[in-house]
Image (cartoon, rainbow, N blue to C red; front, side, top):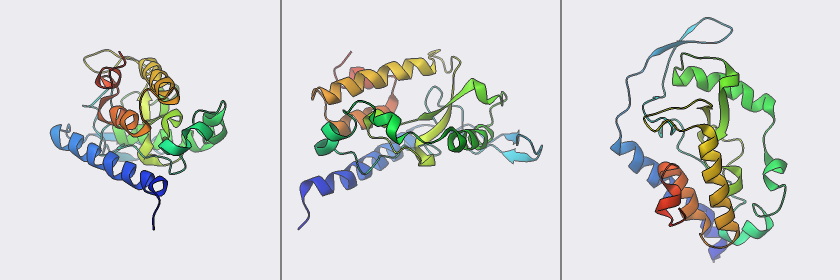
Length: 192
């Protein structure tokens, strides 16, 4: 017989996948553009849309959770000081992925310094550390009609993390709020 704590990661994955599909189904992607691959000069078709900024394209970056983090394990995982640092992937891995994804998003600015290889579902909320479905090149400059910066997302992530670790909000709803739209996540959850 399966225990509830073993079902939680599977349920969270299904719920997040459904949320990503629902989000993807309601928005219209911009047409693909041609980008130039760094260091090779080869033309690449941009397969991810910038139309969602400051959010990632949900078809390219739907988010992915860490199966080791569940509501039952938050006090021994994400809520332990230093947890995120202990599972953060190497910059060798994230920098290589960032270069690929900058080309996939078709950014005209290809300077890697202008992007943060962001965990869409943050490590502090049980995001998968290495799954490319949870990583994307988030511009460090203001994007979208809202003019929000990557640091604005960091502030939202920290507030959600504190709410989850203080048991004000459950883990899965916090993850869903990030995936659906991090710019409204706090208000949706009644936190701001």
